[in-house]
Length: 111
Image (cartoon, rainbow, N blue to C red; front, side, top):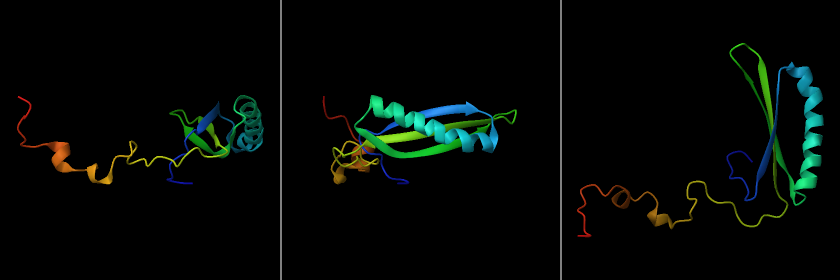
């Protein structure tokens, strides 16, 4: 799943809170995950759980900030995900052609 393009139709929700430390994380994350799952089942029944991550950061005063990201994707993929390096599906011969991209030293031919 790491470094792979996300499926088409991917949706991500987030929930944030301040402080609490490890004990709050261990008790609140399962409850928040359950709440998000219930909300997504009502609002987007065609989407299925795809993955989640928890991020922790400290501000200048040393207070912990937590953000829980939960991702959902269609149960049946509609198509292959797009290649992140070639989002418009251009032919491979046109990608990175320096003569076409830079046109250094080319004269204007329109007039």
